Length: 332
Ligand SMILES: Nc1ncnc2c1ncn2[C@@H]1O[C@H](COP(=O)(O)OP(=O)(O)OP(=O)(O)O)[C@@H](O)[C@H]1O
Ligand SMILES: [Mg+2]
Image 1 (cartoon, rainbow, N blue to C red):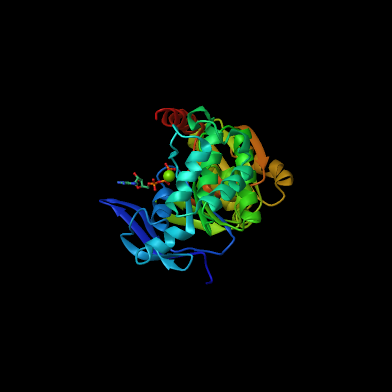
Image 2: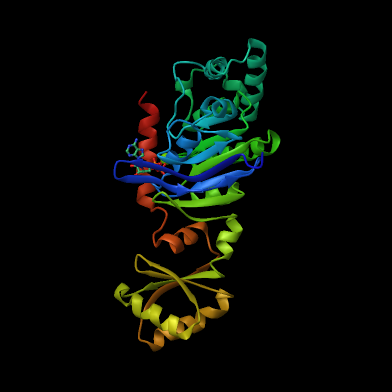
């Protein structure tokens, strides 16, 4: 087997919506692969098809060598799944949730006991094993779900938004567990996220997905390098002058304009700090007033902006999502 996951033009339609549009990807065994994209990009739908929860409308996919439609039970034996919304039984203890999962996968009592200890240790929940899940924090629930996904020694683990709505410190901890289980247990991991830092920090390769299409796929470094240098962000006093300014830079051939967004112009240049005076003097000569200028290394957000013309998300959306997650996880 060459690939842990291989898809060929896999597609999912819901009436008029094309949630996943002819996606072809290959993930190597042992790889930590990310699907990065905004809300509604098609991330959950894609991994739902790979984990045999949803049937493809067309196209093909193999997971660990098995066809997701014709050999779905074989696929299920070889995968673990951590869903976007929590699916733990919060009336049971941590250990009981894991034991139930082990029974569903037909593990005998002795194997279950040993594996429960191993996976709890991996996510540092040994001391809370006998607490009722309702008393867990959001981060602890997420860790327990990851542990549960690992109970039956899957070859491939799907993590759908593993750190959605968690605070930065808990997020960092979960990143460490994900890295460890990828390295120590050798599990192939496919994770979805709309946090660019998460994809950047964890993934060996990232597919950037938007409106069901893959718009770019590579290592995080290569995706950023391809933008061609440092990013200079210019904030204009009059946003209506954005096009005029871009034309001037285009004519001078001094920089590659990445995008225009919210009254700002993003351009990439080599040796950004040396280019700033020239860039500012071109604007000043044209009578265009610049309110602020900043310089930074490209991020995956810049990559997303470059390919789609939009930012991956804004702060407001992030706040709404945090509230939503808290409501959902307390609702049960
Ligand atoms: N069961 C369904 N019926 C109809 N439309 C659906 C269904 N599931 C998903 N969709 C639509 O498919 C598109 C992709 O949804 P999906 O949940 O895969 O996105 P996502 O990238 O996981 O988003 P998020 O970051 O919000 O989790 C969206 O437009 C969504 O409304
Ligand atoms: Mg989703």
